[in-house]
Image (cartoon, rainbow over all chains, first blue to last red; front, side):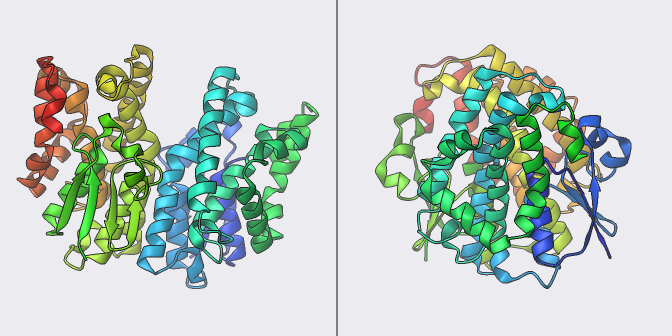
Length: 240
Length: 240
């Protein structure tokens, strides 16, 4: 029963799913849904996800959306996935749920508001809004501080004291990697993250733990960032 | 090992946890954190939840916050909880995760923005903002439409085709019950929900399935709503 994965390379939760599948040897068919052409609202796609968002999966007759729910489903049904991704220990698992729930209204929300209003809006036909970008930045920065002081407080290499990567690590890191297309200048981007020393180290830890897959899946994002920076009119074509 | 539950009766996720515990016979010590006096930011409470929000639990040495994570934890560690609350069937469980993940950025976000800006802000020292209330209402109404057309599409008495209540039902219904303190006039509140006929029936189904506990836990909300409606200066005292 092959897995179909509906995604877009600029979608951070889509990338989290793809890295997860690749590193765990889960075979899947990748189906790009072109958000700029409104394919996510097409009848064909809303048959898969009636909310009209990527990522989504079809696994035989079973359809599912919301990336955290999908990560948990994949970790549960594919026997080759190591326990550290979604621990069976009830307290470790609870902490991962807590991180993922927190993510929705904090890191993710701040990141999306900041990015769309600072840089990325026009790609999706939306105007930039500096005031909204500033509000998003405030929530994004407070979220980064909370990752630093709460989720990485234990001093372990991964979130909530994990000694190996979990689905929470992969979900949150893909959100933070989106800074690549929010802040196009590399020095400025590094300065933005500089106050969060544990996060900078944690990103490196995840890159090392998922290497090759991490950069391969982020390649379209890196390329798009470079083309946006040089204001190429063909910027979008590179991710289609 | 007794469960300590840190909550506030005006907090919709707090009420979801309490209904869940009561109906499942889970003994707990209820500790009210007075949000209007800033107790959620006090050092004593941030030892329990460093994010400074209710609800949170302490179960022996184990501390946890985020209501969905707590509901899953309680359903997993207390053996008396029936399977329908958090099914072991991996596909049914995945659908419940999907509802809960969706909830964060849709129903919950719309509800909170609407309620705080339309009615409830001053209770927490915040100004009302009609423009923000209108934006919240838009997201709230689109979320209600999605519950109607997606989560209740199967025609079953409960969300995602469930024949008995799940943690998703209890979480979402407590959010919608918050309308009690957002729209103080009963006729206006009924008119607001009238277009969502499946939701109105679903709320009744949950009330019937959890009766006595449902109204008992919502009593403070009903009372607060009535006192706000009559603009009593002592409105807040009834929930302290």
